[in-house]
Amino acid sequence: MRVLVIEDDLETAQFLHKSLKESGHSSDLAADGELGLSMAQGGGYDVLIVDRMLPEKDGLSVISELREGGDQTPVLILSALGEVDDRVKGLKAGGDDYLTKPYAYTELLARVEALTRRVTPGEQETRYLVGDMELDRLSHRVTRAGQQIILQPREFRLLEYLMKNAGQVVTRTMLLENVWDYHFDPQTNVIDVHVSRLRAKIDKNFDKPLLHTIRGAGYMVREDAS
View 1 (cartoon, one colour):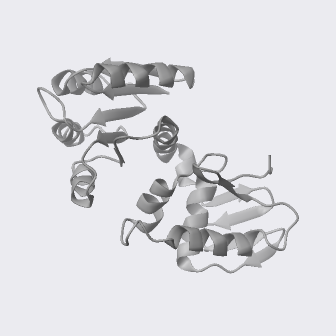
View 2 (cartoon, rainbow, N blue to C red; view 1 turned 30 degrees about the vertical axis):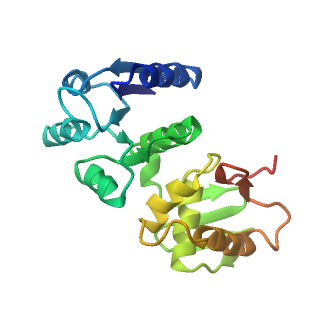
């Protein structure tokens, strides 16, 4: 995966460059918006990581110009501005995801990898299969070991997102943005309640659990329990 990091803070940029390399990816760095826009327009990148506050040209302007030019490369926006209105502006400018500083690198990497999966043929899949559990997006039908599992609409969306990212840690923030769309107070326990209900339906009467809590990180759907 080729990543372009447009970040004016040298320490942050070098950390991301080093960490992405250690994660098996390649990255280029741009220290201002003008250079970043020029490099992005050169093409060849799988994902762009764009800081919102940049010299020469701000991050949202960079993204807007790329979109106006027909460039649909996935963009993860980084920003210290974390209010809902700030996130909405970032997404309306053409960003695909928005991560507030400070952040954990593991979450940033998970989001970057999720963005690349959105534009792969796998995004067009109508069915997801993990172990003996199958989810059909078209019929909204879920089965495990051949038994149909009845889910409420929100539970279905939750499971669909987890299965689409099977084997990857899905953070609470990712669930807020992709399953609930920020339409409630993020301080409530709504995620815990829905995960608990979902686990009771898909795991309770079966030998091996598929929905796992990753302590301090989030949740993961995977076949093994290791």
